[in-house]
Length: 49
Length: 468
Image (cartoon, rainbow over all chains, first blue to last red; front, side, top):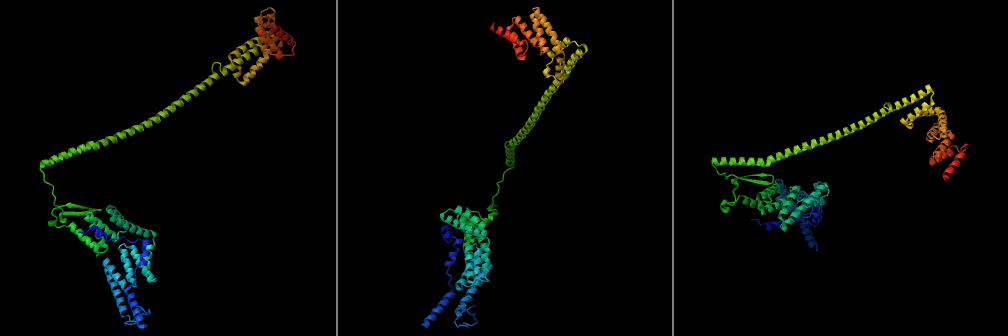
């Protein structure tokens, strides 16, 4: 049996248009390719050091 | 595919032919991102939007610059009614690739109409409000608000889900099922909707053994929908059989009730209508009667006016042709003149003129007649003056004062230039001991003839009479 209160916790308010700008700026865009490049560059730095 | 180190185009080799950087792992990441994108695209094509979102997010976690994956993710969000999320993805996409990016078209499409953007924002605000209503326990308000939201944006998946949850909580299973069907039409593999649907189907098709006779099996009823109402018509219920006599009795009772209803409901309305019609006709007739009465009164007034005018005209005619009328007056005067011209009898003419003057108001006659009268009077006046003076003088000598006064008055009347007649008249009054008339006659003599030979004597008599 579904518990209404528990199910309601799965919902959340939707973003309004005024909040879109903040949402875009706060989005973490770091991807795996970024991590790889960072790791490669760090290893290169260590080798050179 | 470009080298992450120098930006040159990569070849089939596992290293960059330009800078020599190892790109084997980098290529695998990019390939994995592309595979997730393909997976997301396949799922989106079959309307598995939840699955498509998962795949596309994975794709973007591997390679944030996968523009196709980001644009498609925005489209999927938009399809689910998450407009702000869709716009966010498209804006990021446009930042990463400003030119030749379909995301620009999508943003323009949404933002081109301020009304459309406002509607979208209102939809989101109302959804958030209904969510807060749910938290506060105002479920009825939440349902009303969500219905408004869905009327504005029928593809808002989360609104459908929340509305279905509310219906389930209030055990409106059919309505919940309807909302969940809408959810699954938008997103075929939506986990929450599938979970709720399972619950709803269990509620609508409970096991007979477990639930007993509390709920009727769906197969026992015919279900159909009218607007928002689901009609459930049971199949197994049968009308109890009745005997022929009771049916006949029921028919008779029904007939009686029908007659009673006719008598109490229909007949009064007919009577009222007829009464209203009759009253209306009476009012109309009264109105017409009033108009006709007013017309008759007006005509009667006209008749009275015409009668009065006729009377005036008759009087005017009588004034001309009747007894003592203008024509009769002229005729009488012409007879006097004619008689005098024939007989030259001034005394008779004077008597006729006196009689004429008594019967006719000379001042009211025509100007020509008055002129003729004056001419006639002037013609006979001196002769009559002499005659009456002589008669009056003789009567005075004979001490017949009354005759003397009458003749002397006529003498002065016919010839107003005779101051001697006026003097002798004063004497006659004086000798007849009529002091006042005597003084009046002497006074008149002094006024009219102050320089005459009798004026001094008249003054002396006045003084004597006044002293005496």
